[in-house]
Length: 235
Image (cartoon, rainbow, N blue to C red; front, side, top):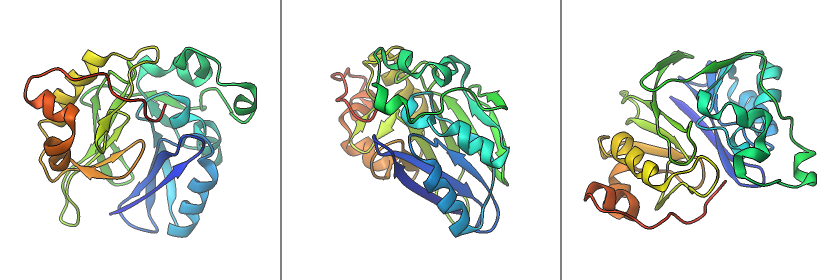
């Protein structure tokens, strides 16, 4: 399997291209702010053919390039309906104006073909099977994508801004809920095998086992305890 990831834009948001191998079809996850050039570079370098864009949530740092990327390749995008409004009104999603210089760089709006994600769905795309889990708390429409274990790789969780190495997503924007994100951690992350590789929306990769042992939010959730509000990270 090929997973090509890179941090993009003002928030260093991780964008991923996932394919069975170089030279095959691929899925693009979270093409955010200024991600389009990196997407095209990865597509050319690995000889990939994009067939879909899938989005972990609707914050502008994860979706700012969805319109140009989908348009360039003629592919659909998938997003949970609770976050759909963020595509055309990114300022409302963070409760304040970002500022004219940044907004002047963004192509806001929906791609021509936008499809809805639902909890428990399976997306069979590019010869891969992504399991979708609704994981609200960072936003109402946050989701994760999971790939099962294969002979060549352990299971992989694309966690968006639910779970980071050593932390979790912020909950102080509209639609965020600190109690709900802990419930999502308990329902979505804790049942996973320790070997599961976590590729998050910001920062380095980790594993469920490492986070279960060291991440105070996941550790306290497993122990049935509350946790302090998460630090601000990403958007």
